[in-house]
Length: 338
Picture (cartoon, rainbow, N blue to C red):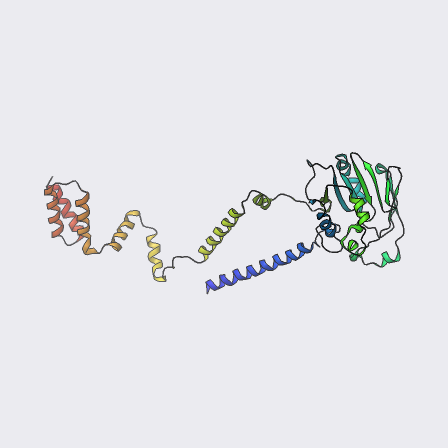
């Protein structure tokens, strides 16, 4: 009954593990656990369509750590779905200074906010009143429209789409700002294709990077990352198998358990000395009537005795019927023959 209990428990744990893994696979596969604008999302609010489309034309990657040490010349970096505070705190100046083309796209704004001026960029952000369509759109669906408009205050800005998308040279690279990041979303690309606009936004880059760190999606190296990097997956699996075998052996001993009648004898044997253990072994391995002949044969093989001593011991052992008496007579015979 105990074996079946453990078996049912293992089956239950296996079923729960499989169900949990299936749920995680569904969530991560669809990508809806990631923020809107992430290239990891496959629903309407993600940018996976743009990512896979660009991947057919040029090298495309996602950044989860840092871009330090990389050559960013002829590279376009997409930083999508930002708010105003993130734009001011972003490291876009460092990236453009290293020759990159940085695309900053604001998250759609569905309300009228106070106008704001970005002095470092010679740019003013103006907000209009939301339309009825925007007000009627459920929040969970998002909105492809925005109340934000871009008003450049410098001649360095070039208009790609008036009030929506502008660009300017910055450092050794260039900067593009889009008022609505939703134009890069999967649903917008499916319903309202604008290849010319996207081509001008991306530019003539040899490589495109989708920035994910501002979403909080970071690749923090952990134990499993190091295990995969150094090829230790096999070792970990072997250790898990050994641990499973240890648990199995502890639950179901390979040696049958002793009967209940032997429990008291086993407890007594565990407290005896090595000499008594040897005596017990001899009792179990050699019958009593064969003990004296066995001792005589062993003594003759190992002892350095004279022929007279050997003959005296044989006679002493032959005349005695008890092992203790035989030992005493043999010892006395050896003492007399010296």
